[in-house]
Length: 638
Image 1 (cartoon, helix red, strand yellow):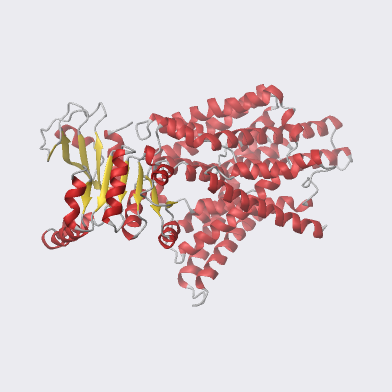
Image 2 (cartoon, rainbow, N blue to C red; image 1 turned 90 degrees about the vertical axis):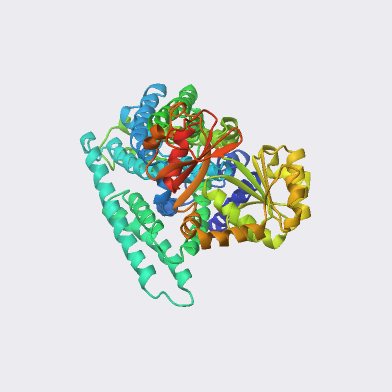
């Protein structure tokens, strides 16, 4: 058995890596390729061969442990990336998504399952609990392909991480009701008990890891490596310890530990993040392929029209309802709300937990038939039917939402016009990379075009999206997205290249804003004759030094733009502002933010308190970073 299992596991991991590469290559979430690989190894191979390559007996009784530990690593990795600073982009909406939104998803899904399939209420709520979870494993790949604004990403990522945990806990409690281990009255107590145990263990493990990594000498030569191994071992220990004290308390434990460590000031954080991300990709690939392979097509087919009704109602009715209820207000635009309504694919938690529940239900039914448990044959048949209904419904929703929502997400985002400004930077040198850092920090969609292999590697290692090629080549610019770019920056060290890039951006692609670096101040006139805005390093350096001499406070404040402070220009479109004076509008702006400049008809002025705003005015907002971002939405809600 071991001789057959080893090459099979190696093959699954290899297919997972290939799936990840294909996803990056074709800009499609890799989950689609992972599911396809699983179906090939499972049901499809069963049609071609005498029996499928992967079946229920392949992993034996160890399947539960394998899936449990894998899911623990996946949830920990997602929680580690959940930064508190990013959550502030949409705090109230995020809380509603994981509370009010989760309740709407649970009850709405249970009702449609109860009457569309039909199913008993306890099974319907079990399916509803599992399908609350959207999950970071399916959301993150979509957001890599669709670079949405920070507030959208923060809300979707947080919803995925938190709901993964709460859905699993609720589902295990409901499951114990289904198999008769606890009464319906014990659901709330069971949920609170598991959540409390998980949080206590997670906090304790996070505290130990923080102290060990921060204050203990982990070896001068191998400290980063030891820190990585400690964090990985800590995640597994948190899961195992919490699960020992209360079944399914492991998930909240790893989530709590991940969030605390991810927001702590840890040394070697970059090393830990890279290592943990690679491990998670391998684990995720293995589990997704293995679970997809265990799917029995007949279980999905037997659902019939009722199954299709469940999918349509969950995706097109319940999801938009919970999103619009949770995001009431003007922080999110209508387009962003529609996009969030569309992006709600289910992922690894529903798939893994549903599979394990089905195994336990069928084992319970077999025990009844063998006389090991006192119950009737009808009750055994009910458990078998519940297992089939559970797996079929959950996997049908997963397959439909992942394939359609992940595959079409970018097209929907482009149609709704919710992708931030596309900026193309020609030149991935020091200037180009520094500019990309600042633009991406504001949530803009940036592509660097670079031809030199060394600069290309540096830009990619810094996490930027890079397109390799000659920036003066029309086909290269087109492939990089110049056709729908709003800003083009020529940032190379060659003025001839920058001038040609600027000409192409204006004449061939009609890009709204073109800015060029001019290395020789004598060439400024040639650029400005084309209407290109210029930045000359010598002049910019002189101005910066002058600011340090004459305006040190301003120079210090502007150096922190994008971190603590910010300056943004936005067009006034909100009806609440039109026709009102700065004196009236000022108190309604977020604290720590003010209107510094107003541009109208080509004229820029510092407004006094009685200056009346008009629709189409471009106002410059100055203040704290978060206050400025909130004020931008207030002044330009769409």
